[in-house]
Length: 223
Image 1 (tube, rainbow, N blue to C red):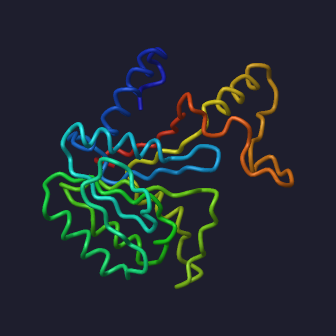
Image 2 (image 1 turned 90 degrees about the vertical axis):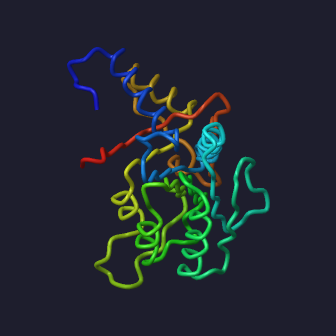
């Protein structure tokens, strides 16, 4: 993070350069494990498509692990169907596919079907100097509690702890509305489920076609 004493323009440039490096799976500074947190207000799928586009541009093979793969995105090299597969068998299949390539981008477009006490060890085992892991989790979908012990951490805090980069997506329209409210010293507006209105699931301005606002949490490899 840039020092607070630096001008806003320098901080903005630093942030743009950092996100450009993190979005490039072939970069030497690519994050080993990137966790995308999206919601009904802003889907993370466009961000995954951008990762795939940049991987194709750098000729980095893409392995796509999906439970529902009726319409897999373009640009993937290997599609692994994870539906009804035990985690050990899934891990072995992914390892075989990754062994056929050098630098690889491994994508889990939806982690919810895999939320299990054995998931963190699986993700840790898949990480390697030649494999960058990208996983998406929907924050609006309730996560099951840990079944092995009431003292085990919930899935989301554990995934946030393991991830080296966390990208949270926000709607551009909603971010602009909150900024305008703050400029007028008004309470920030609520959208979608946060409105707590009967029948309202998605707020006006959700999934803004103009772009996506990213909230970045980046952890340096040195700790």
